[in-house]
Length: 64
Image 1 (tube, rainbow, N blue to C red):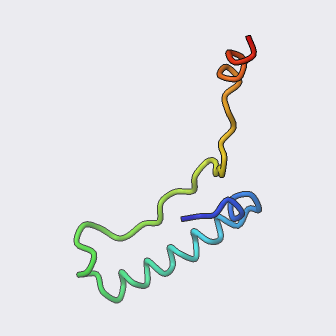
Image 2: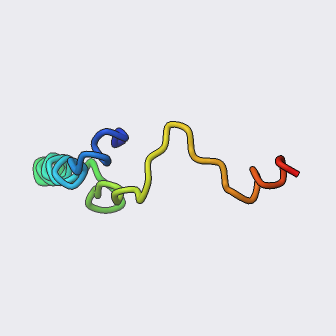
């Protein structure tokens, strides 16, 4: 899991790379533990929200 701070300050790519190195090393040591395939870190999310913004169409309906 990536924190909003990691995404906001551009650290996500580096963190994902480091995590993938750990997953690759674990797979190299014990490939039999991973029955389906080589483990891959999930892709970087496009957005991270603590409180997502309310769509403008929903707020306009409340104003009328």
